[in-house]
Length: 468
Image (cartoon, rainbow, N blue to C red; front, side, top):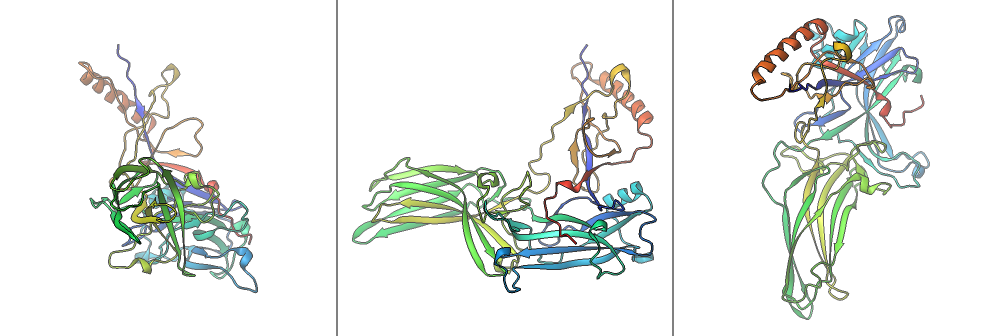
């Protein structure tokens, strides 16, 4: 008899939560990364839960702030500050100010949380202003102890008599969020290239260098291929070849610009390239944040202690706008190739610009199913066997998680996928499984919600919260 293997895939909506030190207020956010689509930005939607007897006439306010630090703390003397903190949005959340026709329209996640968390759950929504900069952190050096330079966003809720109250730390919650940009749906077919030549005094002929990339947009962690062609029509020889991936940063507040090499290689393969000779080779580089740890000035797209931190993405601007109109810290990348033509010949250099971005949601994602039987020992149902639900009509991004006894958080709802053996018994087995699954669902999931919600503590945040 061919054994039947069931594959359990839990389609879970991850919700992040954080509670005040006194335990009276809890804030829930559906995500920590908010995407700038150039024509609009994802709204910051969440839920706040307050104890019934805690407020006693006071109110709960929420606000979104951005901190733009463009200078070191140790250089701040005589009252001069090298950082700006701006409140982008602020409103009263509890008691709600929206009533009747002006009532807030809930997102699917908010609607699910309100139903799940009860009458003490209050929704809130904030919007990023147009042209707000993306989150960027400049990596400090090993000896730096001050706060890193960059652009950070924080969602804060506090209890007070009015919106101007600063609140107390024991009744306040600060949640660090990120504003990011994704690559466009299609990468295009244009291959960036550059062709430069170098002549020499008192010598005829030139050395021609042509560099062509295999694509214009690369995803983080992707291998970058550069085809290098050298034609030596001069009387000088090429001693070696250097290839770099260069990250360019522009700090708009102080109009400062600097560059850092985030990947490099040097080779003497095919060298010396003598007069009249040609050389062609494809070089591969992978720019990674993990290869640039503790290097001062490297721009990252997250916080320094993130396990999954990447190099900062290229800054995109809306159609019809110039790159110079971008705000905050503007990031761009280029591939630089240098030919060493000797002490007297100098160097021949060219830069080819490209973009380094995150892939759009759903592109390049891999689902790894985990085998699981629908029955435990003794034939008793196992809670980890769930129904299939790999997408939603709302187009909401979902995360596939496997159920296990060691998993932290609370799982609500159901969802699963199954796989069986093929062959002549396929149809009969499929029918039997359908009947068995139907009986199991009717007995175990009659009262379950449509979606799964995974509550995860916001404890992984590394932002230093102010001691207020």
